[in-house]
Image (cartoon, rainbow, N blue to C red; front, side):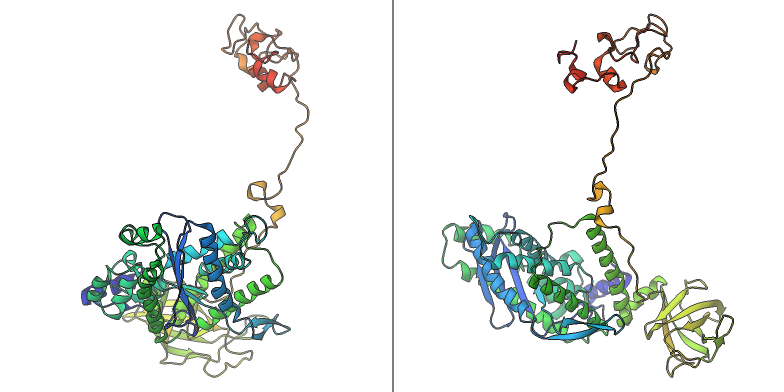
Length: 544
């Protein structure tokens, strides 16, 4: 938990109202999202009990399983879910747009929009991931065939669950984390996991949150008391009123989901949210093309190289997301100002026409002086960026004390055009307030990864076989053995052999040691060339 978030939680607890921790919305909220509330049977791994799903707040559709332990009913549930979800996703595959690539030398196609699925909490995302993994490899022919829509559903669910791991992605969103990204309640993050309580803190305050603590769960797990008192008897006698009971259980969460969407839509959207949504549309387009080309299902687990590449992409996405949030939101950027990674100040001097002619050709390098009263924890030579001009770099030339703060001399480069005269507005003017930070949106190239065939066998590559060659023994009569100590006559070496001194028949002999030398020791020394059973048990396979 960051410093400002901790302060906001303390203020929320003191005032009884949730406090905003963002000034803009940091996620895409679709105009036509699909809300999905899964419910599973307690004590049964990945056994769906029900799901409430739909795109219209006034028309929820309930999918219920009368007996979750029944395989046929589970797959019938999956087929019904596929009918809704796959049709919804497919509705975005009609219109495309041209996207320039390779610096405008070529174009590619991308869908103009993409689907967005909302679930109540992170556990809902986990259920979809597990349900996708359990269905995408099922066979549609043979003795245990399932409807063709079931493995297709599994591939779609796996795709959405994988995108949920990407920081900043908005294809599969859970309401609890979305609210926690923009508001701080007066309770812990663990208590925020109860969706109804968290939303009550934001909408009405602490009193409403206390009343919501005993409300129905948001799934996918059910309440143990409800399981024992209501659900178990209904399933046992296959009661026809089970769907209505499940609908009454899920309907409050359904209404909360749409209220959450309305809350987030009222916030102004961050400037860089559209850039991340473009990446989501790219991912959606790529997946649909893979399906159309008959590509295989996602593997059960990635290989070593694929896993490393995915981890690298996730790390880059996390770094990019953190920078974009800070550049979009002054309240998020304030966290970096507290830690010393950013500072704010006022431009006191500016030389916009300065040209550096010390190199092979003259280049435009304006300089500005920024006075700040905040701590400056950067060294000369550090490259800084201003969210107001993200394409421009400001190199710290010097830092000097001045009055109640510091004067920071900066040399600017980039974002001013290609001429020796800066374009209007590209250089900060005297009196302008700037925020400068070590954060940067600059492209981060990924590290080079080997081909899968070049990885060691411990990471999935081909094993390397070497021929050890025939065993070689030591020459006879070469003196005392290290296993025999000094070779004193009559001394027992502790391994069952009688040491007779140099030149005697010892463990390095001709390959025919006597029984007192021990076959195991002889095998270790490489003196025996016999089948394995004799190496362990003697000539007859029995220890002497």
